Length: 376
Ligand code: SF4
Image 1: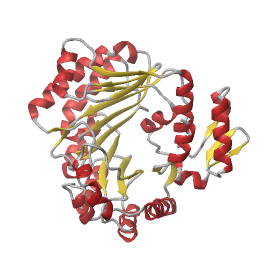
Image 2: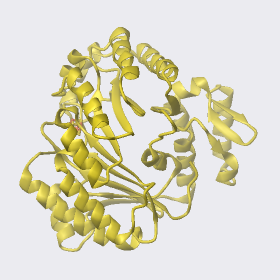
Image 3: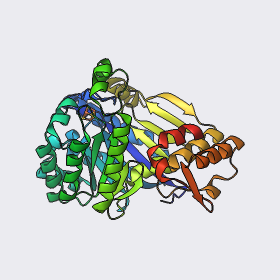
């Protein structure tokens, strides 16, 4: 998980979905063919706009997220990868991930993505309980998710990840266990866990009080998380980050970049970037994004300059998400406030350290949010 000075990741936002889930706060538009062509054309131009930043870099990962990027089709994904290659070759070790929803997965479609150059698939399973999927507004059923995983494997993918959600309405420890019991029966190499958060301006936010009554309390949420850690470890998954587990060292190289501070460029509407000393975001509107890029302009509508002190604090907090912890020597001299915060967190037994390495303790893994807010 070391980084070299020329490492770069690319994130490509493909916003199309066939419906909008009531808890979703991502920028999403309804899936329509002409809009896909509009996006493809703009993305091809945006790659050229960024060519000086991309050229000469070691591309560690390319991540097609969304939305539902599998709806974009393998031909368009291939065109994007070819365009990136024209600016800077993509090495054989570059991790190229595509997100997919279970209901769009077929062996043929996945085979086409594999041939286009994608080497990792992340499937939005969320739950293996049909009643929970229904409340989440998802259109697939558990059996469809299982079929999608096997179809992806049959198509030839060796690196398959799924997302699972806990603390969802009506979920119980027993139903969570049933979802976890499916894991060892599936050809998975990676798993990301999320707890449901109710985001403002979503349909879930409008009925928040009603939903809260159906959601597990904090203590049960902690038990669900603890059970997942134990069960996943017992079936061969290594927890390498607070919410991420893998087999055979198939860490998400892309996500590790976010935690170790690797620069990344986000392409497409609403995509975030972190590059040099700035964090910035593209406009969250496909038509406006496309118009700006077609006119030869960057589509950035928000930029934040990060001071070196703030960046150091952020990086320390992010890096601590990784189970391997951080080598404090890499952080140079820490501000007095940060040193005091670390001491406080050690007294609370949320952080521990061996020589110069600082880690989350077993307790700290459960209370990471507290650790992060203390350090930031
Ligand atoms: S499928 Fe994913 S991106 Fe699309 S609306 Fe649902 S949660 Fe959002």
